[in-house]
Structure formats: structure tokens, C-alpha cells
Image 1 (spheres, rainbow, N blue to C red):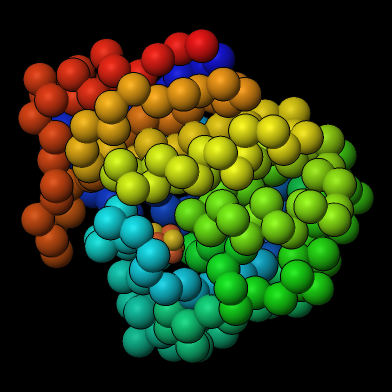
Image 2 (cartoon, rainbow, N blue to C red; image 1 turned 90 degrees about the vertical axis):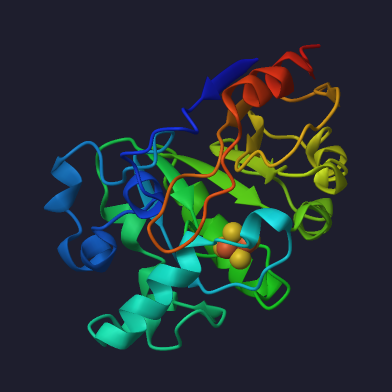
Length: 244
Ligand code: SF4
């Protein structure tokens, strides 16, 4: 299993600087031209974001300072991107579906960095369209990360997971640990956890069936008080992860 650990106390970084693709608005517009570069997002563990869905609703303690909400509302006010005309309301965007086909270079693509693909308001029929694009672009690998683990598992009960799709769940506090069980046995090449932001001691985690975990605290931001972990606390939490 691979673990990727990011420094929760990097005070020079902001949530938006850490996690958000500022090229979002050019994502579909520039297409193949922009695809000549290799990295289009500041998310450390992905090379590109793809947002066929925007908007979401809060479901977990980790959502309290959701960067996607702040950015979506900002973009809505700026009125420059049609994608965000509904602000943070869940909205599907058919016109973005073909974007990965134009990315010739193989990329690690984080799907729905500005939403949750498995949100209750995203119809399975739309998720089918996203999965079809994933299947049609085997040169890329796609990270499907959700906090709606049950709905993702329900979706894949009747559908095959493409061989280039990784499935992951976010675990931020103790009462979200149950999400891991929903992906443990899914037929995916990589089952992963995003333990970000790590907000409390999670105890000993059963990582049976999990291939990769990302661990990070909450980034510093000027608009809210980050729930930073004390350094000693972070180490304590990590010591308690049980590598199986
Ligand atoms: S699930 Fe993700 S996108 Fe949705 S509110 Fe929570 S942090 Fe934001």
C-alpha cells in the first residue's frame, strides 16, 4: 500500500492554492492545446481535474470549510463561467463530457474536484455517461473519490468498474470510517482513502483491501480558522494506522 502524506502545517499554502485547478475555465475551451502540458492542477496527487458535475451539499465534518463551495460562489459572482451560474447547486454539464478525449497525453484525472459524482442529485444515467468516457479513454487513469460511499457501491452493484478507474472514499472523522467497507471489495485496480482533512484520532483502521491512502490536515486559509492538527497529534494519528 502506498501512503501519500502532505504537510498539514504548511502555512504558506491556502486551501485554494493547494487543491484547485485555476485552469478550470479553460478546461474545455483550450482542449488539445492545453493538453500539451503535463500538469493542470495543484492537487498533489492528480495531474488534471475534470468536472462534469459542479455543486454539492455538506455531508461530513470535513465539508465545513469546503473549498469548492467558496470557489463556486466566487465564480458565480464573477459571471464569467457558465459552469458556475448556479453557484454551488448540483449541476451536470453534458458539454464537458468529451473533454478527456482531447487530452492526448496520459493523465491522472481527479473526477469532480468541485462536487461529488455520487451525490444523490446526480442521476445514475449521468454517471453512466461519465463512465462511458472513462472507458473510451484508457490512456488516462481516473480517481473517483466520494463521501457518498453507499451510493457509489450501489451504483457499481450493477455495473463494472472500468479498469482505469480508481475508487476512493474520504475519511475525516470517526463516524465516517464505515465508508471504507463500501469500497473494500469493489473490483477496482486501486481502492484508496483520502484522509483529508484528518480532524481527529481515527483509532486503528482496518485497511484490508485498500491500496493507497492520502493523509493531510486542513490547509490554512484567510477566510476561516483552519482546524490544524498539532504536530504531535498528527504523528499520533498516523501511528495508529494499521498497515495490513
Ligand atoms: S462532499 Fe466535497 S464538494 Fe461536497 S460539500 Fe463536502 S467537501 Fe464540498
